[in-house]
Image 1 (tube, rainbow, N blue to C red):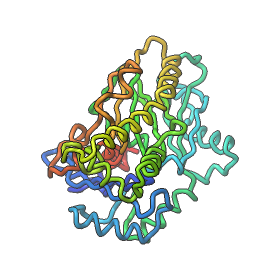
Image 2 (image 1 turned 180 degrees about the vertical axis):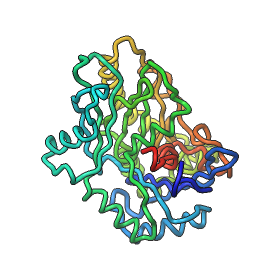
Image 3 (image 1 turned 30 degrees about the vertical axis):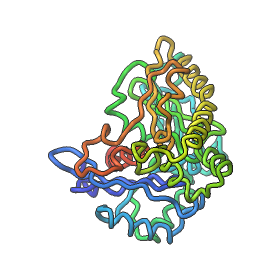
Image 4 (image 1 turned 45 degrees about the horizontal axis):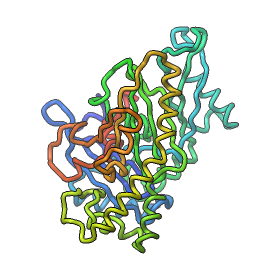
Amino acid sequence: MKGAWFKRHSPIALDIGASRIKAVQLGWRGGQWCLEAASCVPRIEPGAPLEAEEVSRLVEVLARQGFQGRQAVVAAGDGMLLREVLDLPPASSGAPLSELARVEMARINNRSPQSFEIVCWEQPPSTRTREQSCVLATACPHEQAETVLDALEAGGLRVLAIEAAALSLFRACQPLLGRTESIQGMLDLGWSGFRLVAVTQGVVCYERTLPETGLAGLMQTISQKFNVPLAEMDVFLSALGVTVAGQNRNGALPPDPATAEQVRSLIQTHFHTCRDDIRATFEYVASMYPGAAVQGLLLMGGGASLLPPQDPFGKELDLETHVVRPCELVPVANWTPWAELPSLATAIGLAQFREDAA
């Protein structure tokens, strides 16, 4: 580590979701990075474009919560990115993979090769022939990045880098994933959709957003059924003993057990809808790596805080599942309730981004 990245504090890592902005800052203590500050700030208007006024308010909130400085790194969500799986010569051939990936990405998406930033990586050898290599490429068009950058900088932040959220998530979960020949999954249960990332041999080998998923539809259903405004949903769910951001289900007993049971049933049903897509994804990845067993599924994101005690994924998919909490990913220097919040996983990985290692 060097330059602007080697300081007592990491830049502020921002995972800007449709309903909340997750923020993390790490501190360098005793030769390692530790969680020093974390927060989860509700969006002014869920799903709305980020604007300078909202960023200014965010900066004030984070300063009160112990965040240091104005430098930031930002996770690029699905709406900002282009993704392609490319057949290219293997890296062992000496071919310039990054340059070839840029040209192919531009051709496929009918864009100028200079109109986006791109990152690519070679997948582990699979059933493909030795003459070609499967390369995953992710690109962020400049116009998409500039929209977010303009709002952040107008609101008082200096953005050092933007990174694909899947890569940040993968980096965060390294302590739990390790490097194994088996296939492992990470399922980010977000507001706009559920992102499934598959990993094998220490490399992200597949990524997709599952169709017709996300917490937005679930919250809308609960809102309409029980006549609760979306802005009051956290309080409503908390009163029923259902975990929400920054709180836990160990609070007061539900004042209305019947309502609590109905809400939990709706949550369970919603999570069940993506089981077949998860199964199909793992079957596809397994077909690329014959003999590699599907080992387990890590769960994170805002939806992981809503999971019922009866795991809706593991038993029916015959998978070992685990809800990821920040305190499992990095040591916690200053304890905060946020250290238990699964939705911070992406931001933790983002805070460990290093410019010289990108």
